[in-house]
Amino acid sequence: MASRANTKRGVLPGFGLTMGYSILYLSLIVLIPLSALLLNSTGLTWEKFWSIATDPRVLASYRVSFLTAAVAGLVDSVLGLLLAWVLVRYEFPGKKIFDAMIDLPFALPTAVAGVSLTALYSSKGWLGSWLEPLGIKTAFSPLGITLALMFIGIPFVVRTVQPVLQDLDAEVEEAAATLGASRLRTFRSVILPELLPPLLTGFALAFSRGIGEYGSVVFISGNMPMKTEIAPLLIMSKLEQFDYAGATAVALMLLLISFALLLLINSLQSRVRRAAR
Amino acid sequence: MAGSVPLTAAGTNPPIRSRRSKDSGVVKWSLVSAAVLVILWLIGLPLIVVLTEALKKGWHVYVQAISDPDALSALRLTLLVAAITVPLNTIFGVAAAWAITKFKFRGRQFLITLIDLPFAVSPVIGGLIYVLVYGAHGWFGPWLQEHDLKIIFALPGIILATLFVTFPFVARELIPLMEDQGQLEEEAAVTLGAKGFRIFWKVTLPNIKWGLLYGIILCNARAMGEFGAVSVVSGHIRGSTNTLPLHIEILYNEYQFSASFAVASLLLLLALVTLLLKSWFTRKIKN
Image 1: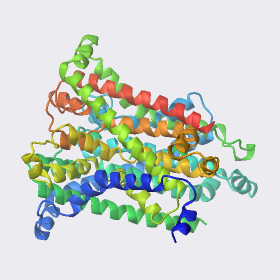
Image 2: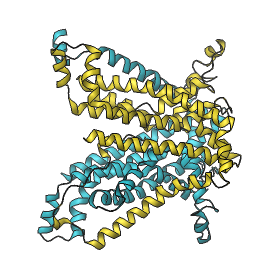
Image 3: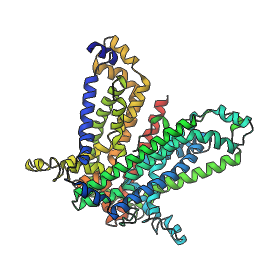
Image 4: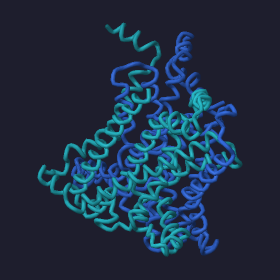
């Protein structure tokens, strides 16, 4: 039995050591601390959990978080498709720099993005001073939160769509054109179906990042309870009042809902993929 | 979640297409201009705002803000935290990638999912869980207090929270890369009599070094820039447990906008250097 396992594992050394260390480190840094959330270290009863999780202010914060993240993810999907298309299909001056700029939200600390976007969209800012007379309030409104999440999410969409677009078979497109399909028709019925799965992945990544996002949102949102208070901020303020049970309840609910939504998107994705075949 | 998109995703040259599938000039240039406007609006403007706001009150205020003792101590703390967390997560990333890609075992995919877990968790929750474990009312709180050890609202807490949010970066880059490379070269080295660590050092490392560096700089950028998780566990004690991102927030809330943006510009510089190195490493990987 032992020798069979050995041949199955191959001849390379170090499995026990690297595997053991990985599991140990994973447990210490991720699994054990996360289990503190599930194992109810704050003595939360089921009734108390439910009353906290369904408190109107808490429900409002979930609504703000999920709605702004979903809208930002949707807008990013459209804009991200445009950016990926242009960066893959066309040559133009400065293309390399624009391509590299897409990654800035990955590398820029969220607090920097937060203060910068607030300055940009506040009533004295470059864009805010121009939008406010039009009656559009961006900073300190759900729209501001959405704009911040769009900044954070855009690279996820572009970087998942780009490689798929690159590998797309040119012959299929040419065949469609030979058969007399217009360019727009080719895009709609040949190219877009192929791009749907990566677009969904990009959306899911941007969306799930948006739900948990804190740094870039906390400055621009204005943090008004019931209106622009996001769920992560509510966890933070409960912690500041030493309400550990409350913070745990809000966090647990947030995690459960976002995992459920991600599972839903995943199953939707495999269905789209199967339909595309 | 940054960095969770595989390396191959970064821009490469477009394939050569035949004339038939080319778009007309009008379509091309209107799409290109729309895309350029989107990039300038969404990404370019926030970048420029940091610099103009930082220098609004002049060079003197800028220099004063970044040479302020509190700012310098925040910078020192940020560098210290990165210097501890990045190597730890790098060692883990290499070990996990070795175990996952060089051997077949049950639950492999499950292990990869677990490694990715911190990307799916809000940074604020990433901080909260350590408060639940090590805080005054947490699992080990009473024991720690008895022994006069402080983790939450102190350096160890900041390090733990940063380890959590940057946990997947290196492993995430290495796993697909080492998977593609297979294990034939390593097996040949074993046949030739090479042992353990030497195989990794002489055979594997040269193949993965650019991917490894790529993972390390992304991990470092996030470690130096983390805000939410660190905010929960830091306690915001000026000159002691205040990192650079937290210092930006404090200055901002005190309406010292120029100083706040001056400190922010340091972190913007970090981001720009990261992007430069990233595109350099990406080019090396492709060649």
